[in-house]
Image (cartoon, rainbow, N blue to C red; front, side, top):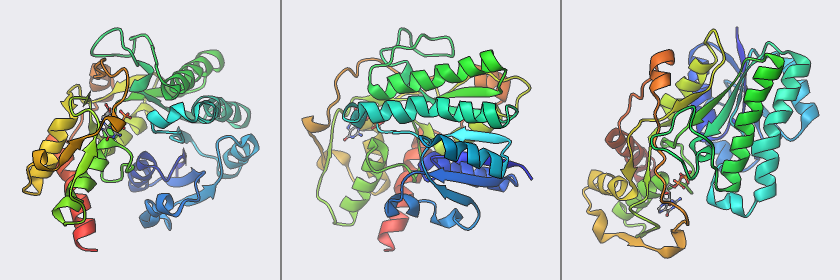
Length: 320
Ligand code: GDP
């Protein structure tokens, strides 16, 4: 039986990757820093199927002990401070976790078992104020948030350890990926839950920022499969993963509210508090390398994704 170690296991991607690896017969060891009940609640369905360890990737000796004790053949680093705007308020912590944390794991792998295959969750935010659209694996990095800067470090240190020490270490540059398990601070889940609350009469309005902001949004369930595929190749390489399509926050609202028989224009209020600076660049993926080499393609389109999220919130709330 293969063993995988997943850091950040109680996040959206940690949960979906755990389910995917369990379905493939892996033993899953999950590292989770947070003891927050709401966060741990997300993985309650799989708690009896995984080995859950409480701790942080900042704890070097814990990382070494985990690799020695459980002997994983694959390590997926999904632990991160993940909300871009709040990385400005926690710039140092973001650097400690999203940047230096990666080196800590790479060092532990190098010292315990250099044959372990390593996946680093890189991000489209490394492109920041991108020099070209769409972006591919060769597009230069121009991050413009502490989150993006730290992810750029994590990405590059992974490439450096691969080249310097011959580790099988890859960075997956993933664009926004969503699911019913997305955190409530992200706009997609804010909209799906907000629309359901309005339909149920629990709220009267939904306050959002820039409705014209556009993203390359995909389904996180598809993206965790790409992570796994990246570790099954004969050669370690980095890949861009996204849909190649962009949609606006407005379009998301339109489909989400319509799913519930509502017109978003009657409920959505634009509130400058949620506006972000510097949002003029279009981050959109050119995932042709992943199509070609991994045979990966998204299976859920934008409309299906929005409806999946609304339906899940509706099922959970209308029955509670
Ligand atoms: P991000 O791409 O990781 O920052 O994901 P988010 O879901 O937080 O934001 C996606 C886009 O939605 C950004 O362009 C935001 O400016 C835009 N947006 C518009 N209104 C809101 C809002 O109320 N909350 C959030 N989080 N984003 C919003």
